[in-house]
Structures are given as C-alpha cells and as structure tokens.
Amino acid sequence: MVCSTVIIAGPGAQAAASPTTDVAIGLTADPAGIFTHTVTWTVTVTNNGPETLRQAIVGSNVIFGDPPPVSVVLPPECTRGFFDIRCTVGSVPPGARLRLPIKASATGLGGAGDEGPITFRLLGSTPVDPNPSNNSATITCLIGGSLFLRC
Image 1 (spheres, rainbow, N blue to C red):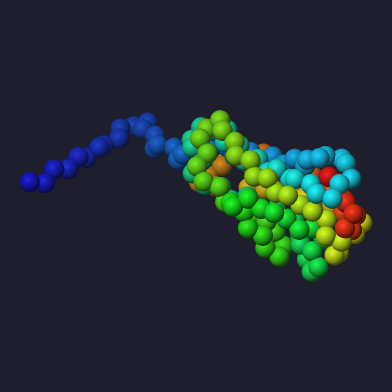
Image 2: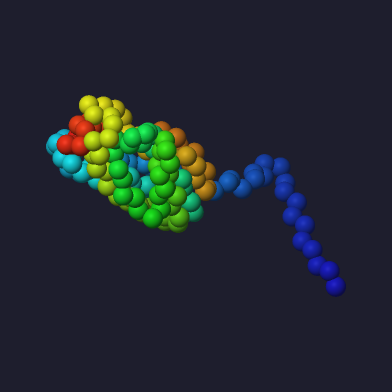
C-alpha cells in the first residue's frame, strides 16, 4: 500500500522563509592602550538570533610575513596561515556568545614600528546572516620590535 499526501497552496500562499541568524563579531585587546610584550585579542561571536547558529567561519587580516612580527597562541577552533587566522565555531544558541582568546606576543623579527588595523570578520555562516553591518570588528595595534605591542 502506498500513501502520499499532496498539499495544494491557494492564492496568497507564501513559501516558508529560509532560516537566518544575525551573527555579530566583536574584538577587544587586553591590556588595551598599554605598552606590553603580550596582548590577548578576544574575538567574540554573538548570535543575535532568531535561529541557532550551526557554524561560523571568522577570519583576520593579521599578516605574519617572514619573519613574523608577532607570535600567537590560538584556541583549538583557530588555525594560522601565512596571511591570516581562521576560526571555525560550531553551535551557538540565540542570545549566546562564544569568545576566542588569541594571545599575541612581539617577536622582534620584523615589523618594528608598524602600526595598523587588526580586523576579524565573518567569512560565512550556517544559517546565512542577513545583516552584514555587524560582521566585522577592528582594533589598531603598534608593534615595537621585541619590546612591546600596544593595541
């Protein structure tokens, strides 16, 4: 015996909307504004809802170069490339946030006196984020050789 159901939509019927979630990216430095050898950058992934964030990929523009001006200690969700850091996070319920601490230390191997922006941005998410206005965060850091970082 074969059973089937047929649903016929009448006039004015609307297709179900695809699930979405608003992901916001934040970035802080600790300590902030102080000359120090090591700074912890904290990337925050916030799910503003309405759906559960199943996965997000966050990336940075941190350029390590050769030789690298900073060394980093990354959380398990993150990997370091030659030109960037990428972090992949899993499930984040609506209203929740996930923090990714990244410890950066001056190496003295290049970039002394360089000052520039450090930006982390949302590269992709499941479900799709319909609001790109809060998908990146930037801080400015100064590298003083092996002596200090200041963000």
